[in-house]
Length: 277
Image 1 (tube, rainbow, N blue to C red):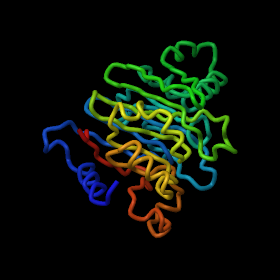
Image 2: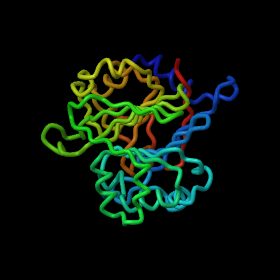
Image 3: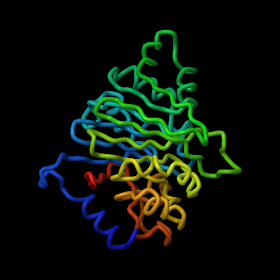
């Protein structure tokens, strides 16, 4: 993607869409890879509940966690929650069960490994909770799946966790491409490995829908391969880096190779996004 196009995409992303007569859309950063995405009347959470910082990543502020559990604004009327993979800096089974018990209209979409962990902490009285849970048992090389959930269209594919092919190959890392209200599409890559081979195998799948905003782990921006995936292979309108170390909240600590890229570094910050069509 050329520098001019990056600048244009960012200007579009930061524009106030109400003035253009379009629906208001926003992405709010929770922490690590956790976000809330709002578009028109749809609202979703991705990787919102976890408890392990591994000594280097930010945790969701306690007041935000409590508001999510209670369904208090702005975390009210959440339609669905998505989990990219079952690692402690992305998913807590106990917290997710608490949320599903508390907010009985929320649906959960998660890899089968996370759903299995959820069942381990659930009791006999929680069986009705699983009527709102969709487990995705996807392995590397499996074809992508699509789910029509009313105003939300969910496309999902297994992209190996970073470290492939020698490490963490047993982790079901799901890249969710989620379209809200038919015209706002966000891609969340989880902890995807930044190699082109994982995306060329499903070229027609990626070409089938334009992506307004990609939420990619920061290591995509520090390599030519990762930048090519976002800018050329996937033709993303705008990309935002997530999973950034806590130290990057001080801009002086952001390494040179990441300077100039859009990164989520502080819980609570927001971006606007609009349909790039």
